Length: 284
Image (cartoon, rainbow, N blue to C red):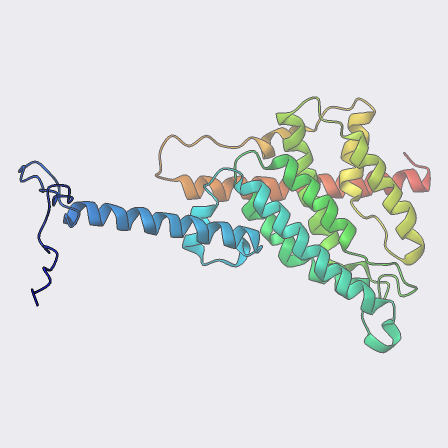
């Protein structure tokens, strides 16, 4: 019996031929160290971006390590992100304490404690003010923090009835005075009468609960503008931000600027309370 002829296992004329690789010396192999390093750098940059986005979305920018937070605050929209995070965190704390204040006989929580809880957030406003184009956002944020500071207005009012037990009131008022002056300097079309109406309504609603003179200095300042009274000279000096052309001495100038603002805030608030007392006594 004749043997069966096996098919030729070699390449036929129609079989695909192996691709010959170019031996050109200019061709860059895929294992080139430089390309590998660049790819790795790109990968790490994307990971950093994703991490920063996650930090922002999680509301953790405020709690990030200083070197990370400082870098993130240089990015576009940093002031908006920080404002949103401070407002959200403060609202949550206020809501939690306000619920406990409703049953203050058992919990011992009053609006004094809510006021105290706003202090860390008011401190964070200082960081916000360091960012570009943040004055309007900072003003609106402090107005909100003032609103978060007294809760549901239970019968405990301001606790012991001692205004010093509400530490946030004076800080809020001083910040609003500074920010209002800066905001009007930067934007002469700003409608300051809207916050003025809100401050007056708050004072009207809060007075029966033992919380008096909330934002008294700010109310006096804005009322003066409404009556056509120019911003006091001390305001102009306090809010005139120094322009630094050199790094040397920059921190010292900032400290001086801070002292000027603090002096202004205390002065304008003291004047406001004095004028308010005179009108109350009918001597103004």
